[in-house]
Length: 199
Image (cartoon, rainbow, N blue to C red; front, side, top):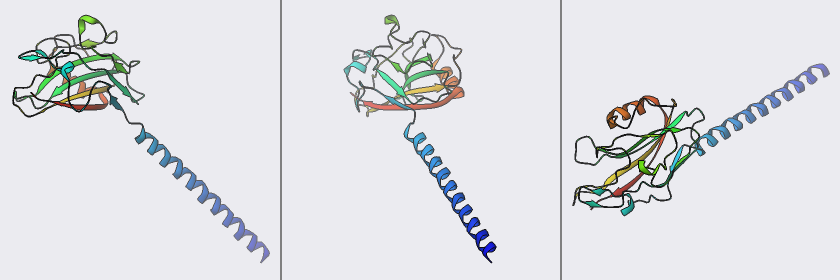
């Protein structure tokens, strides 16, 4: 009887230990998941607010802005990222296909920001090795907002892409749709900011 009692106690202690172990593993798993969700790939900017300013408005086509690209910074990129790309797109442009305002690719994986006015290729502010291809304005570099007068506020979507390749096979003359296709084929993760503008 005593032997049976000792066996039951041992079994009970073993089950308690197993339950504690399972509980610890479960808590660690939950912590890992919450940590992963708490550290999502995120795009930030000190220059962008809910509405674009004169700085981010195009100079030309009837618009009189300064045409300066905003500073952009991203955090918590996937560890497997081999390069980054940034685009600015207006889906509300009355063209049937939106309007590409900025495309910059082959940003080194060691970079985590684009400084203000990096969209001006002549100033060489963008990270070394990056390429700015043509926009729907027909030239490379940042082209600011310039929606039709009286139109509804347009959305300007700033997006950073974490890519699985170190370089995209593009140059300054590659059309926006072709770059977009390559981006979508090689994107691991992306993060966006939206600002509005109308006139």
